Image 1 (cartoon, helix red, strand yellow):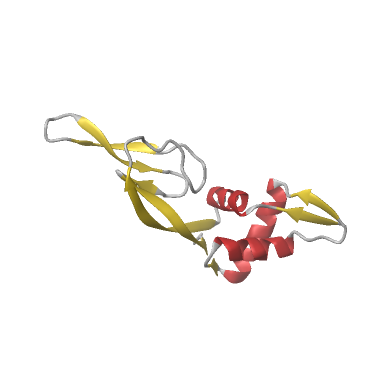
Image 2 (cartoon, rainbow, N blue to C red):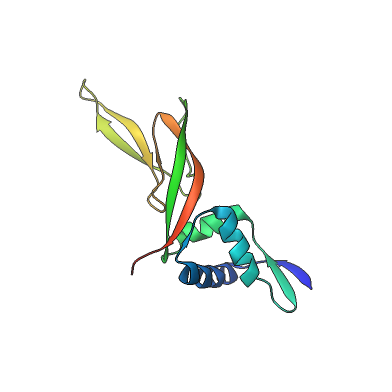
Length: 132
């Protein structure tokens, strides 16, 4: 059997089968195991990393990701990209008591991740079948 890197189509097909069968998968590691079982073919073994699988699932319209995170240290430099799906974070500005506007929250419009002055560090992902 040849080992190959899975294409986006292979990953999405396997994700559809897994998430429709199980409805909810409670960890990224378990999702990778289930998807990897579908990516084994008679002639080929298609490989996918947990990170690539998570990012593909975040962009899929039939999957909803629940992100559990812990609070980290207070950080001065802003976070540019989402640690969950890799998209650029949107700055949400709020008025200050002096009438200026300051960025207090950074939010991802793809997966819903948000963080503020205290960096939120994702620790667990739960994958759900999205209601359609």
